[in-house]
Amino acid sequence: MGRVLTVEAAAAGLRLDRWLVSHVPDLSRARLQALIDEGHVRVGGAVTKPAHRLRGGEVVEIEIPPPPAQELEPEPIALTIVYEDEHVLVVDKPAGMVVHPGAGISRGTLAAGALAHAPEIAAVGGQRRPGIVHRLDKGTSGLLVLAKTVPAYHVLVAQLGAREVTREYVAIVHGRMASAEGRVDAPIGRDPHYRQRMAIRPLGEGRRAVTRFTVLERFADFTFVRCRLETGRTHQIRVHLASLGHPLAGDAVYGRGRPGLPVDLDGVALHAARLVFMHPATHERREFSAPLPPRITRFLSHLRDNG
Image 1: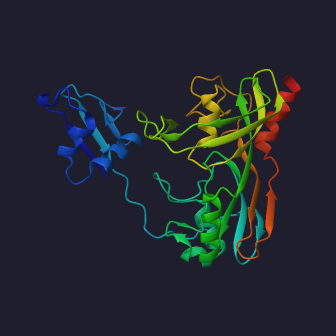
Image 2: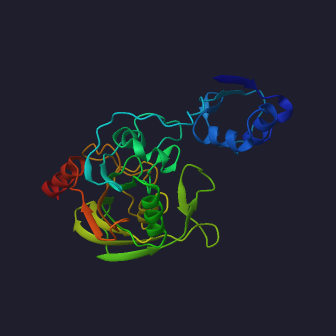
Image 3: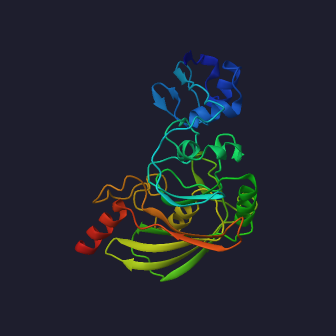
């Protein structure tokens, strides 16, 4: 569904989002801002920002995607299962797969595949994210644990909140990191200028985020590192490493302006390689690992062959 509006001359100087509120009264301001952020609103044929100042006379095109279905439909998607019992499911997610529906994506998610594989998780957690205890970005590969029962879900969520779950990643970043290891302790919150991005924010405007890193191997223009999360904020590793001047290879959001890569990563050079938690039913320490996917091993081979 779409709408086409023309900005009246008297509206010159108004912010786009405020003008839309008065001209599309059936949508909330928050919904309109989300549509702008997601590129569904064009002014004069160009995607712009909510704060864009109108000149008058422009044509504003609004595309309104249909709302996602409230109930998640199971899909028979192949999953790489690392471990499973009646309480938990540990999977190795490929890069390119979205964990649960959202932001215009309703099909092909890990949640839908897990629901088809284990229908009992429908009653666990949120309706559109059944069993999902934590997430990985679309472009990130690696380990995730899902809960198959309500008690297991609450125990695992509590472990995450208490920082009792170990999550280790490996990554390839731009540039040669000087320090052999380090710790980034910087709050993360929504970027006030680009609502689809996260950013390091002043105290009180972001949530505390802590990332530890260790250099594994250095190359001429890249560094292979291991990262360990002490907290789990959205885009945490991507934001923290970019703040050091070393954005992840393949990260078009936080690594803008960086040169192209010699190989196709099909995502960002980030892989959740190790996951440790206490089993929610047996209370035994369980440790899992996922080998590097071919997309990253190819990149490393290229770097090792070419310095």
